[in-house]
Image (cartoon, rainbow, N blue to C red; front, side, top):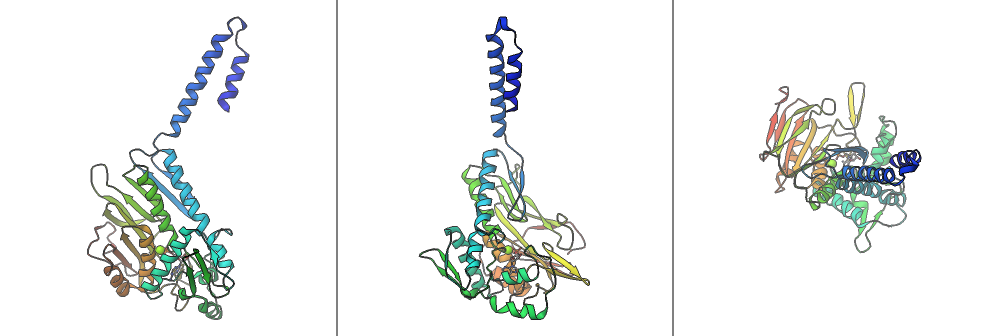
Amino acid sequence: MGCKQKFFQKSLTTNHTNQHKPYVRYHLIFLVLLFLFLSSCERPEYSRIDVALGTVCTVTLFDQGKNSIYNDIFNRIREIENLMSIRITASDLSRVNASAGIEPVQVHEETFKVIKRAVYYAELCGGAFDPTVGTLVSLWGFNGGTPRIPSQEEINSVLPLINWRNIELYPETNSVFLTQHNMILDLGAIAKGYAVDEAARITKKAGITRAIIDLGGDIMVLGEKKDKGLWNVGLQNPDDEQGITIGYLKLSESAVVTSGVYERFFIEEGNRYHHIFQPYDGYPVNNGLLSVTIIAENAMDADALSTAAFVLGYEKGRALIESLPSAEAVFIFQDYTIQTTPGVNLVITDKSFN
Ligand code: AMP
Ligand code: MG
């Protein structure tokens, strides 16, 4: 538009004795500018950072990153957000919750797939992972409200609503029914991972072989570094500000997802209260762990497993991860010790951890 305005201003002041030449010249300039503008749309970008799924998303496509591919990726992330976010009233998830105790709700097949996977993990880990924790998340004010410690009576009143067995799935119609009134399904522990997998799928489909997708700490690295070396993925210090790392994981072609006490929390009377709950008593996980990081082939599974292992605690969490063929884990404890499964390639740079 700006270019067009300039062009008209200039053509109005052109010399009448030589009318056509300036017109052609400015037309050409306009076309060249238009070409440069369009080609700049396709110029490789180093990274794109945007807010989606309630978090900061950073996608870095190497080699042939184009605006159009970044657009496809971020549009896809927003589609998933519109289906699975608890904060969007018209999302599939909100519709399922609004009909809790009333009737089954038909959802998009993707939403159905993610809910089904969440139920699978709930069963696999005996309910430590439970996507029906939504009432607890709200009660403790981690769903947009003011975080606070609820009374024991309030906690007792919502505990009967937390039970993944009260999710009924109807695969013939992709319908979901929460059997109890006021139940709240929450996909916060798994949906981001699914979005990472979808972003990776689009990236690969576009022919990009080297990329880093980071949706608020749920990470996927594709390919290797340019020199064929492994990527270094920073491991967050769970006891420090976001972005401060204790070291890095060396890997290629993997998902890396962490669940920890540092993502959303408040401190009262010296105690930290965070957003991952023990479904059996309604309190934030307090088992000596600060964080659990899972390395796996896909991010949806890594996401569910990081939450599950964090809630299960070190012994049971490690047993769960070791029972799975392609998952590895890093456990960081409150006393700053670290345990890893055998396949982890971790370089610790912060010497207060060992
Ligand atoms: P993540 O960061 O992946 O561990 O997910 C944490 C989010 O999952 C929280 O913000 C809650 O929305 C939800 N959540 C909390 N506790 C649990 C739990 N025990 N099982 C499943 N989801 C949970
Ligand atoms: Mg998770």
